[in-house]
Image (cartoon, rainbow, N blue to C red; front, side, top):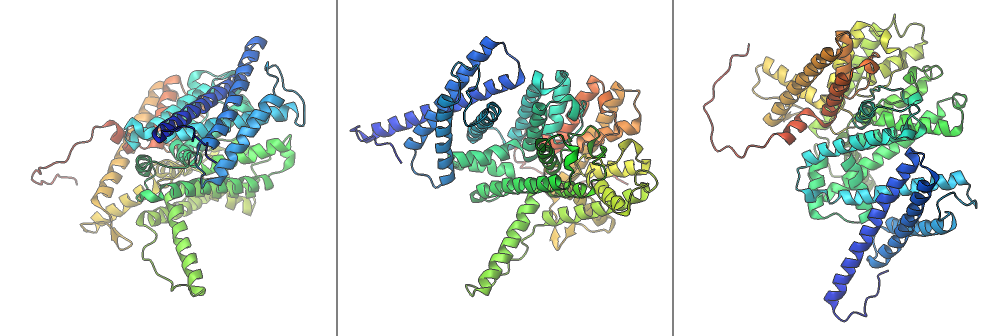
Length: 604
């Protein structure tokens, strides 16, 4: 309902007062959420003395009360919304916050009072609630990012840099690790998580606490989707609207041509992500033995962590030896689930959305035709060339990887396995170098031909618009098609009865050239800082970093500080894209109103 302000005689004054009051309430809720979240991190990360803890807890409680009251005012001051779920959520949040603050918290902040819920249950609920509130406010704030007048490319890059820095600070908290961590190692781990790589300098299972592992999981979840994608969707949900300027900005960010489809595209991306991760976590839980875990909670966290890690192509694991850990290396059904999650995450959201629209058209049109509502209307070329190239290239690379792994590893890592085990391990071995980073075999025991094949697969990477990195499948496909076109004497590149534009060919050539430049410089610099390492091991590490794969032959922890910085730069450039980074840094040239005479350059 709407607050009645009829006691004002001037309608303009009423409107001004209403807007001013709404702005003040929004500010109180936002900054109270930020302060509460900061205090939560302070309590989780440190062991303050009793006086500091009491004062900070009192401030924390006051923030919860202010947020609860603020939500009540927001409901009264706003028009009825079509987002019924959002309104109900705000009502529940306000009631829970106020009731919980007065009834459950000791106002001096020393301890919880026992009631229906135990101390640990209340503590857990408060933590989750404050994180949700913080995320809601950050999401709404992200919709105003267009006011910075920065290009979507620059915002994309800066969002990753900011997230990496925040992650490094959080991982540096005392309670995030078991034995402490240097800032360079925290920065390396944060970069690896945000860039969904999976290279680690510390053992995720032993050197990070549960709190630290949750931070890492959140970092690669947000990094896999892109922080702007995540916050824009939830910002729209909780705010209830997009400004036209925001829609135009986000449209460029997610490569959506139709402005009216911006929210629909965001909804499909987030829904597909959550659905895939939930299904994967369910099957991982089902296909792993309970006896391998101390509690059911550990089993659930293991399932959720690896499902998210697989879909985001992150490669992080809560096992010291990865999936090669004793008790897990022969869980072949679980390996297949992870492999499928990796493929779905690496295939690219444009492909998923493209086929969603295709099947929706076929099913809806078929049902209408059966019911006699209207005749089925055939729409030509529902699937784009980019979608087809990504799918065909992915399928070919999986087949090539499967055959070569089975061939070259038959007398090495596959020796002694059952027939089903060899099949699953070979299939997983063809999937994981496509930017995933999990290992079900001893990486140091791989044969040289397999390592060389892995270098190629890692370099190509996943599909564009996915959670993975690398050169991208469509870029590789365009380059191959261009090569055959030149060899056959054609003056244009044609595929699927369409001609690929010259701009696409130029971009593919630029991306390939930049990838070789970055990888070459990375190998050179790491060898300079760590001359004792073998060239093939360093090459594998840099290829893995640039393609955000995360596979390693075991040298990551041996890297010097300079080498860690080089690998971090490779991971970052591989995730955001070398051409994207170059476009953001180089000033664009205006329209060229002249043309020089053509002249051929001797190539071969």
